[in-house]
Image (cartoon, rainbow, N blue to C red; front, top):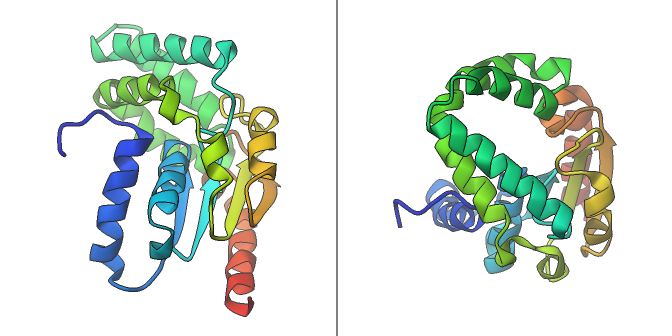
Length: 209
């Protein structure tokens, strides 16, 4: 329903409603990054027959929800809540945050579009980060039930969704293929040429399989 706070679970419901509208009986390859990766994963678990495969770029939900994760989540919730309240320092801090999130030079144009929208995005991001601390945001065990090919395209310099913390869950995901790319969070933006080549190779393998 409209008005629900931002979360991977909410976006998964939207995705599963949207796929038949956009594709009919065709099964798309769904690409998801960050919270979108977690949403794509949840949607695939709920309706695997609706998708041909997943491409997950530094997805949320695959790292332990331990004391370190909870502390970081609380810190970022407070950060974005301050932005939603109009804290005078937030625009500069938000720009610095996105230099950490999208550090790759090829992502500069996209980063330049994102940063000026910080005040508008802050309440949504506060909701999203709050949702990451909920018990059902931990998708590690659920991912083991995925029943379709999955390509993990990991930007290897990510400090927020770190490979070291998600590695175990990825390696226990059935039909998983993993490749690493330059960048801090989004391989398709930060290392687009390499990502495109790997994505097309993955699609060819699906077609030949």
